[in-house]
Image 1 (cartoon, rainbow, N blue to C red):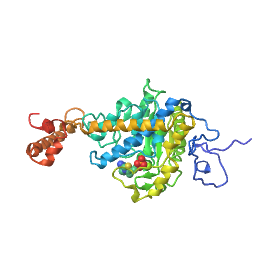
Image 2 (tube, helix red, strand yellow; image 1 turned 60 degrees about the horizontal axis):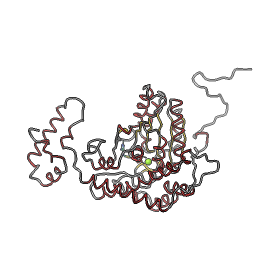
Image 3 (spheres, rainbow, N blue to C red; image 1 turned 120 degrees about the horizontal axis):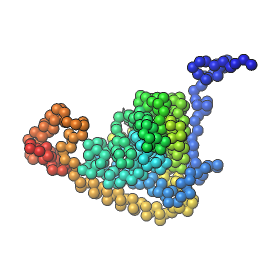
Image 4 (tube, rainbow, N blue to C red; image 1 turned 30 degrees about the vertical axis):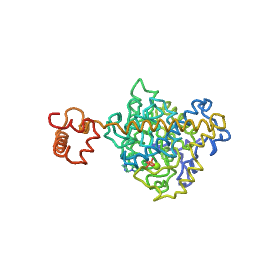
Length: 419
Ligand SMILES: Cc1ncc(C[n+]2csc(CCOP(=O)(O)OP(=O)(O)O)c2C)c(N)n1
Ligand SMILES: [Mg+2]
């Protein structure tokens, strides 16, 4: 028999028919789902084991419900001018809580900015959330020097959020490589990296995937495809089949999941995590959802999408009510439980808000610390001295300065001469 011909640099079979292709398997990528729109398991669906556990299932539901409670309060707090900015996670509760629940608590998380729910799942308190958003003296994320929602907590293995999009994608490949090199964490921990479909248009997406593809490491990429990058709908963001279609191009195991089905998200992330560790390689999960809220408090989405479209999505495919219907079908939830939870959540959030509202900010001088390690460089010293001179001149004379300084511990006096 003649030996089959292959080219030296590829295992590609030789064909005589000219055939172009533009899809994975020449058909749209399917979406993995376990529960239908009314919380009923699909035929043949294998539910994750957590569903057998009533207490865990209720915890999942309560964690999802906490997000809109917190989001509504903080959104309004921003509108009252008490915090400068906020971003909600409306519509993505199942993707965020489900993925958090499927990860181990010490997996390293590199988020984009809508993943506060992952931190809450790991025990970051409501007081911590408020302290960061208010930038008060209890802010453990950054001493009040970051914009709201830029959380970070080494204790919770949650890397600090940074505003420039997609920077976390190559960083996650590096973090996962470091995990692989650490004998204590090798084969045990993954780096989980969240990003939006919009961020995947950045060069850093491709740089990160290239790194993860060629320098194998256990990085779990979670693409939150919520249909929008601020005002740009996903239909204008790419011409391919979402973000999932890019995984195979980099030789990365990939799955697309219904991001509004918390049980499907848990199953997909669990299996993705297992593969990451077993193969020591990257895995990509694309979670499909719909951004129900405005992009941020700086956005009014009704300028570019119909109110009715949003209302329809909320009603037809609500990740929270889908799971509630599932719980009810098992006899694990009812109206009394709902009323009790809502009252408890509201009281907890309001208590944390009221506490944070009255707290002082860090000393003003903290503005100049931690910028660089080691000795303070001349430019930072100069800026500190300039502010000190201005406080001396206007601090107790000019009303806007007086009221602003009163929000800081020591009223800015730490910057005056002799301090
Ligand atoms: C490098 C960079 N370019 C632009 C922006 C402004 N920006 C902030 S969020 C955003 C949209 C991101 O959309 P997506 O990744 O889909 O996340 P989503 O907001 O939908 O969760 C843009 C363009 C930025 N922060 N960084
Ligand atoms: Mg998006």
